[in-house]
Image 1 (cartoon, rainbow, N blue to C red):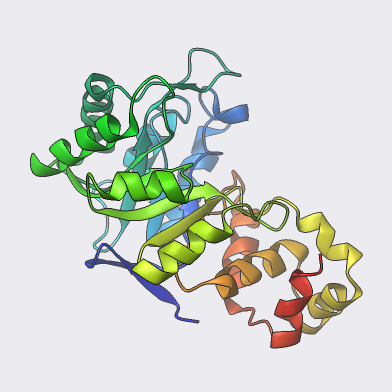
Image 2: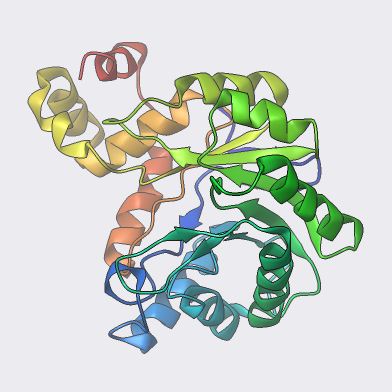
Length: 278
């Protein structure tokens, strides 16, 4: 499997990204408990070679984007900051859809300001708003792209039919859906992405890794590769498709290093097939 992927024809990045959900406070709400550690983690992520950092205006809200700019701006050449808009956080436990064009325009402008960017490389519609036709929401992003505020457009939490509708309105270069060992409901979306050259960013990629320990074959793979269950799951995702760009997130440098090391784990055919039986 290739070590890199080119998104949108001009953004070439390592296929292991970093999800910046957890650098905000607990439950992605408020400021982090230890801001110095959060900033150090972001700097370490880039030092180790991560070239895609995924965030959203709703992480915090606004906290994750602000920390990224504080830690990394001016950004090193080749670093892609992907963010998302379309979800509101009126309280810690709520994620409310608001994909009205007017809101998306305001959200994009606010993200540009927090991230200290003139153009966002990858701006993703965070969800589908049941009160707004997705064509209107995607159309708003297409308008922002024409204005030079967005380089490429992605979507999140879309099925294949919704993706097809979005692609009639704008050029979509990526999909970010819930996908992991325990939830493979986006298999068909991945197949479309692989067929058509879109990137697929699985969110919550490590969920279900405890199932690895129930498989004798995978326990043996862990011993052979000196790999943890988390590393095996990430290696499986990378092997699943060349369009796959896992974005595991953490608030810990130690856990980040563990996740990053999964890039060196190459599963055999038998080991990869064992995941189908988990």
